[in-house]
Image (tube, rainbow, N blue to C red; front, side, top):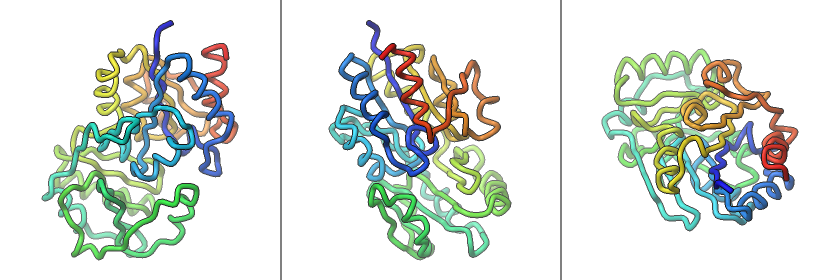
Amino acid sequence: MTSRLIVSDLDGTLLGSDHRLHESSVEVLRTLVKQGHHVALASGRHYHDMKVFRDQLAIPVHLISTNGAYVHDPEDALLAANHLAPEHAKTLIGLPRPPQVRLNLYRESGWHIDAEAPHLLSLHATTGFGYQVVPPDQMDTNGVGKVLYLGDPQALAQLEHLARAAHAHGLHITYSTANALEIMAGGVNKGVALTALLEKLHLTPAECLAFGDNLNDTEMLNLAGEAQVMANAHPELFERISGAERIGHHSETAVAQWLIQRFGL
């Protein structure tokens, strides 16, 4: 039997509508690992946020976090870290934005935010991952894996325009939801991180199965030999992926159900 790498996004994909990992998904992934396959999780979430799900799975899992800025092996060793240039981070921190738009920095050690946002903590209630409030003028521009703006789509579109005008070639700009603009260093995305992981595991892209639901999954899905797009995905995502298959809704554990059929479990 040929070993495969099964890589999945979390929110809107492997996790249910309650942002939890359901037991059927846990059982399927554990069974596939016992059969000799590999599993990776790839998310815009921070590594410390993601490893709670890895620990729940209780199997060896590689973690691609912060949209590819960081890659960790199953033993928590950091395999890759790619940071924004400090001058680019400084520009992004200083971009003019409406007061209701929250500025976030993801760095290796944690999550910094420019003001209190209690509603964001509810999204991470299942993991306990939280932010530290740091005024923008005190934010460290070194070691930033991602700048994340959260707010109204129109305001984010303006911020995207300003960011591209300032440092277009030095940035990778994407969205994880309509309300979340995510900016990493140029060349940093889930697909690039997945390429390096496949090489480490001595597997080819054709031996990779990937699942995703939003625009920040584009490069990862286009790389994988078998790409599955969720029924609840961003309307543009399916059109961006060559040869993608549309599967069920994340609230119905569609990833687990598809894997059961794919591997005859």
